[in-house]
Length: 407
Ligand SMILES: NC(=O)c1ccc[n+]([C@@H]2O[C@H](COP(=O)([O-])OP(=O)(O)OC[C@H]3O[C@@H](n4cnc5c(N)ncnc54)[C@H](OP(=O)(O)O)[C@@H]3O)[C@@H](O)[C@H]2O)c1
Image 1 (cartoon, rainbow, N blue to C red):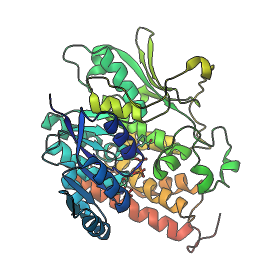
Image 2: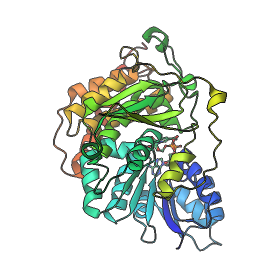
Image 3: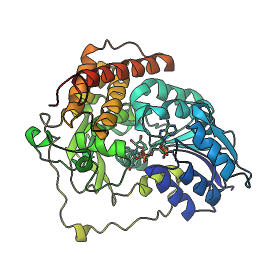
Image 4: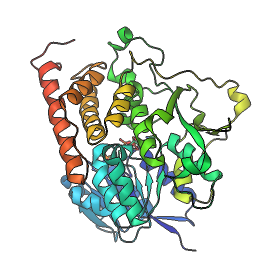
């Protein structure tokens, strides 16, 4: 059997680098044939020299020109712009595309991968949040698999597939296996247990210091606001075809139990492991086989105690409820939630708004919106753009350094 050929969207990011670790540990099994990133040409060039893909792409055209000069001695094609990145997603010589771009930028290249008949290992939750039903329908029509990389969804995927029965797919497994609830675990982030008053003074530097996971900046802020868990609820709804009221969130600060499935017979099955994304990446790349991953062994006696408590306090962390609300509303509401959140997170990181302004801005944006139908990617992108415009309007009115006052 030949090596599995992988296209890697987001090779320079946290997930991308972890994925290359897994690939490097199994050179006989995997081959990276295409890689894409945003602007980090230096890292992409280093990766290309080491992994020798057929093609790379950088969204930033100047960065791509620099990379082309640096790689002139190798047989590596260099593409540029969002078109170039999309071509990586659908690269003809790849069998599987690992989607690890951050944010809405992941939508079109990942859809391109599905349309080109590639199995997708999905880390980029935003594309599923934005276009959920459309995304899953595209995968179904193309007859390809979507294998989750997000640790919670990988946990559920592993639990469900271990008890796999004839004819079971990701979407009908609830009916076939008789599960009653999906239980997503949340670490609670760096501000677990904090009150609203305390959160008002949080700085980007504090919010970027996640206690358990080492991740990209955007998802780290999403974890601190608990929007990450909200996005994951929407992701789980689409991946597993489960109604919002059957998806529950519990806080589990140790991040050892990655999620659970509760069955109608009273059994609750969990997947555990050290908090290291190389495990779910290895699961997704090798599925349905299991391979060694370069991660530490879980030492439960060393950890001693695992704790669980109810969902995050909705007063202090309203983002989770905002996400449930958008999911219930349906249509383009989740795409708007996502667009507003991306603008809010960037503004918070740039010290233009405060931590508690993130849910305020999203709430305001959603209040202005009329959620439309979502029958095409065009409608999704339009909703995303509309939400970004409203979010920027909020920042101009109320943000720091805008016409508003500092809160
Ligand atoms: N990190 C984790 O542990 C983790 C866990 C679960 C799920 N996820 C999900 O995985 C995705 C990636 O997260 P991450 O933490 O790896 O993010 P990250 O470290 O910020 O990396 C993002 C990647 O996307 C690239 N990129 C950004 N904007 C782009 C654009 N417009 N066009 C092309 N490439 C672009 C970046 O390139 P440059 O480096 O050139 O900017 C980088 O390669 C997110 O959706 C996140 O929610 C992450």
